[in-house]
Image 1: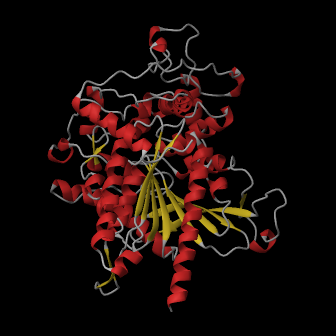
Image 2: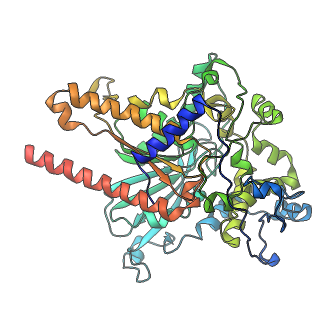
Length: 509
């Protein structure tokens, strides 16, 4: 079920007002963990709740099995560490779960015939390492193209913090069904299987450090765009990728047709995030990324996303800019065991084979040399509050001057469609997206009220908030079918909008 304005806005704004003015009402109890049937020979890494119903289960609280926070045994962990495949092979193993799409290992001529097993037409995927300027700077790229078709629209997908493009494996085939669509997924610089140059901050002031950290990623994205000769495209960013997508839209205007932000981090403002070096907010929801069981997230309808205070040790690690991946690297043979503490919860709603493949893939990218991961403490304060909150900048998205090669302003953006997507049980608060929507709509209303006739005619700004049911922060994976349907509708809308613009331009010439 698609939940959009105004009903969603009323519900969540009411929740926001209650939070500000009254004591928070405890959420209603959610159902206990469902029983998962799985053979012990399936080589899975799932965590099962104890058979007896504890008080925590009856109250609907996230519950952990004693002694099984890291369910992978010591021997198994050491074996995986010793025998683990290369990061490239681990990524390929994930991509093997994509149906219908074929890897482009042969000439295009042999692939030009229609694939009888794929009713949506022959499609191929490629992996490339796109070299950028400077030393040790390259982006790992995955692309899907439709054989025999000229690309009409381009979609670029960017993952979140510490993740990789492989996590989108359930989205590539369904989204690429659209005729004329060229799809790209990128590993951000310093993450996934992209190169990992040293991450060094030269700025001395606080805001300069944040901007420099953002530029580490978005400058690489812009350089990749130029290398691929893509003039305009639709950009999808998840979590930290969503935050950086906004920064990209502001620094490099004129290249986006639509901006889709899937559970973006750093939207709301926190008064301590910029002024304090590393603040310690009273409570946060980010810990749920590492503790919430995904079977619960995808099968319950929580009225309010659960919140937990950050433990002191985690804030201390953040203060020291110690990433969780550095712990994995230092753990040596115990690394896979520590990773299983996250993967066993994040992927336990998936088939056993896919869950195991994603565990191997996660370990393969977590254990690599630290690089882009060190940007997080510069961009976010503990609790996922941004030091440069998006809410203070979102009204400028799609409203920037466009400069020519000589640096002179040649045009000005007239707004772009912005779509916010959140999981129904997302630990990222949807209130930030709703507040951003209000600001963007106000900008458009001002143009339509005070602008010239030409400005009104060219106005293209819009915004909406979509809630994905039975999904958490990783909504693209938790409820892939719903997410993919929304993405196809959004890309079809881009195609129709471009056709209308071309028709209008032809009639006026």
